[in-house]
Every structure is written in structure tokens, then in C-alpha cells.
Image 1 (cartoon, helix red, strand yellow):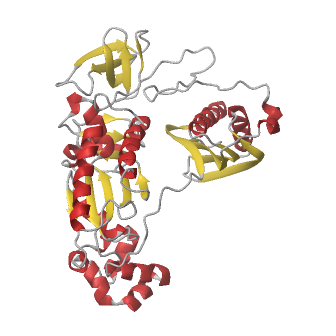
Image 2 (cartoon, helix red, strand yellow):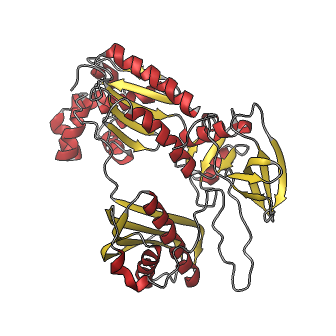
Image 3 (cartoon, one colour):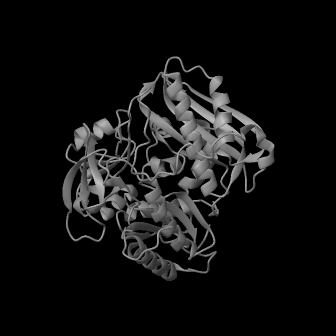
Length: 451
């Protein structure tokens, strides 16, 4: 293990919720919960104000509403979050060629590989500057941990939250880890934690006291040896630069099970088109089309078909996904559908797919996140335009705003921008108001370039 704290772990603070607060002056300092708003929705992120009420990630949204009934509940804007993440990851890559993203809001950086730091003083200076740069570029805060290993750097960033910096001096790791819960160690989830607890082991020091042989007996050879080494603060895992994408996929979970086979086919076609847009956005094509179906009883089926060559043709992907669907029984109802493409390449072989020559290029145009895809209500029916809470809109008369809520043919919009000093005005419109349209998110920092 290293002798200097040159591995950095960055964790953005309550990322999705903080991004929403930064973009919406009326929500700053307020409880904000981001996640699925339907009956089966779960919390993706809660602001620190919402966490004070006991709301946390992965909690059922219905429970969150009971705990914090007056919080603002918003649906995620992943395109917006990715743009901010790209800005942050760009700052990290300026420090080192070895950046290992764990998610949109979290990454490891090997400072030594970029000659950015070589001892405690230089590492601390990098951490201070990074946090300042993130705030300047995104208006958000991140917590930084610095240590001689990935495990300890992540523990340090957790100690630094929110909006702080923590550095673990090499040589003090054992003393720091000893009284901590075994759950602090990588790979110790609820099941492993309970298993150790039943054996009388609840802290990291108690793992060391039990001895390696006992830990291996309790957890097995592979897990036991690794966990014992971690308890001794031994972690030689390298920071690995971002790996190549293995697949591209999209999926939707439905608030009410879909029983209508025609509707299921329509959803699969829509998902296929979304998947292709994402595929093309990454400059990729793929050979294997994958269909995922979760049925009413929570059983999940995955079916795949491998083509003769890679494609990014939406008609081909729709057709293949449709064929896969025909082999799946959806009689009892469907609660989740997904379409993916794997076997990725950076070229296509269009001539292999003459069977799709008569198909239109795309069923639907690229839409911004603000609008819920319209679902046909039946033959001859007119589908009502719907709007997602928290998503961006623009009105011909009032300018840029965001959806506070909608229902019963009405949509309520608060008109404000990230650089406004105070809350904006609220107005209500018909959902089909011709002056109202979806809009792109505005940069959080004036003059900033979105990724």
C-alpha cells in the first residue's frame, strides 16, 4: 500500500437533489426528494433537509411522503445530471489519467499517476482546489476523501460529508478502522453483516481479533481472506480508468401492470427507439438485441437475438425486439419492460438489413425529459399531454420555468431561473396550452458550458 494519501475519492453531496435546488431558487434550503413518483416509486436522492425527516435513498416513495409530506417531490432529469457529471469528471481528468467513475456523482482519482500529488501537503491542496473548482463550475458541493487506498479514501469522503475534506494519514488506518462497524468495509452488506453479528463480530477490530481462519470459516475462502485483509487496512486495489461500455439499454417500470398486448407491443417499440437514440448518441452500434420483461408475479425474463452484424437502425432493433416479445407470455400483466443492445461496435453494416428497408427512420423524435411520452388511449381517442414534476418548460409569454405539478387537465408552472435571487411566480395553464412547451435545462452557472 502507498505511503502517501494520493488516492482521492469524490462524492457529490445529495447530487440529484442538490442539482434541483441549485436550478430552482424556490427550493433552496427546502426538503427535496427526487425519484419515481408512482405507487411503486423509490427515492433516488433526498436533500439534507429531507434527510432530517428520515427520508433516504432506496426508500419507497410512499413512506417518504408520510415522513416529509411538505417536501418537494420531483422526477429525475437524468440528461441534466449527466451534463453536470461530465463537467465534474472533466475536472477530475485534468488531475490524472486514472479516473474511475463509480456513478454520475462519485469517482476515484489516482493523483500520483497524474503527478498532481506526492505527499500529504500536495494531496490536501489538490482536494481544496478541486472542491473550489467544482463549486465554481457547477454551483454544487462535493466531499473529498484522501488516503493511501481506495477503501480508506471512500471512508474519508463519507466522514467529510457534507461539503468537506478529510485526509487519513498513512499509519493511522488501523486505529481509525478498529471501532467502526463491519458494514464500513467493502463487500459487507446486510446479509454478511448479520452473519458476522450472530458470531459476535460487530466492529472491524473484532474481525482482527477473531483471526483470519475464523473469518474464512464464517464467510468462505474468497470472501474471508479479502475481508480480513481489509480489516487490517490492506487494500491494494488500483484505480482503474473508465472501462468501455459493454451494452446500451433502457427500461421503464409501470405504475399499473399492462395487460393489453397491443400496448405492450407499443411500449417495446418506443423503448427500442429510445435505446437506438442512446446508442447513436454514443457513436455505437450493436449485434445483440435484448428484451427484458418483468411480469405481474415479479418473475423476470430476458430474451436475446444476435444479428449478422452490428446496427444502429431503429427499424431493425424494433423488429428484433418485437420478435423476442412474441415468444414471451404476458397474459397476467407486465410491470417492467426493457430493450438493450450489446455486442457493441463503432461501425454498422447497413447492407445486412434489407428486411427493414420499408420502415420509417424513427417512430418518435428525440424528446427532452420534461414531457412524459404520450400513450394512446384507444382508437379515436385524443391523448392528453402530460408533464413531469420538476422538469423544464418554456412559455411563449412568461419564459423559462419548471413544472410544480399537473392533473385534471391543468399544469402548474413556477417561472424562475438558476440565477434568480428569489422564488419565481407561479401560474397554472391547461395541459394543452399552445404557448407551453418542453425546454432544455439551463446551466447552473451563468456562462457555463454544458457537457
